[in-house]
Every structure is written in structure tokens, then in C-alpha cells.
Length: 119
Image 1 (spheres, rainbow, N blue to C red):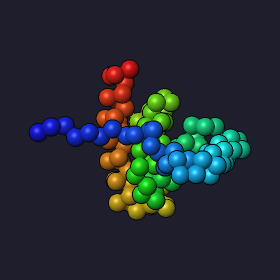
Image 2 (spheres, rainbow, N blue to C red):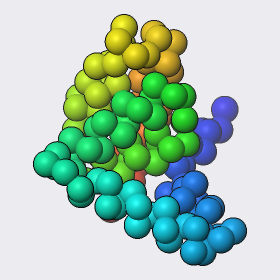
Image 3 (cartoon, one colour):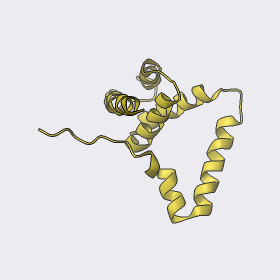
Image 4 (cartoon, helix red, strand yellow):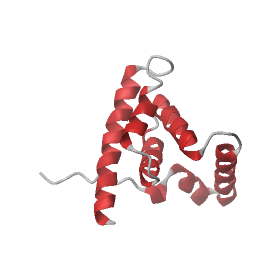
């Protein structure tokens, strides 16, 4: 059986797709996200973990994987990502979404290991 290509395409994220259709809208979206991330007292790592929790809760797989892979590349460890997913269990997220996101994290971890081996 051939291995499944699990590559997460960071060059085709939703924000990049938006820019391809409407450059101004895409750039404005990115600027707004950067402004929100840096507008308060939370550091970038904490903000990214909150974003991951939200993406897991809403079931947005592609965006979740893109952010999780970027977080791993930025040095956020797997345990922190798992904890960010678990924190919402029973508060705002049903167990199905949690286990789904934990599976996505395993897929991201495999991709991260592959990228690390190449680099």
C-alpha cells in the first residue's frame, strides 16, 4: 500500500485563496488579523492557542491544520496544542469535535516530522 500524501499546503491557505480572488480584500483581511493578534496584552503564542481552540470547536479542519503546523514550526510543542484543544471540552465543545481535532493534530504532527526530516 502506498503512503497517503498528507501534505498541508501552507501556500494555499484560505487567506491566500481570498487574495487570489480579490487582492485588496485578502490584504485587508490579513492586516485585520494581524491587528487583532497584536492589539492586547496576550502574547502571540497564547493568541495562537486560542485560535486553535476556536478552529477545533467549529470543525474547520483546513484552517486548524494550517495554524497547527505554523504553531509547531514556531516552536509550540504538541502537548500545548493538545491542551488548547482539550480546554474547551464540556464548556463550549462536544467530544466529537475534540477527538476530531486531536486526530487532525496527529496528522499535523506527521507532517511536521516529515518537514523537520527534510530541513
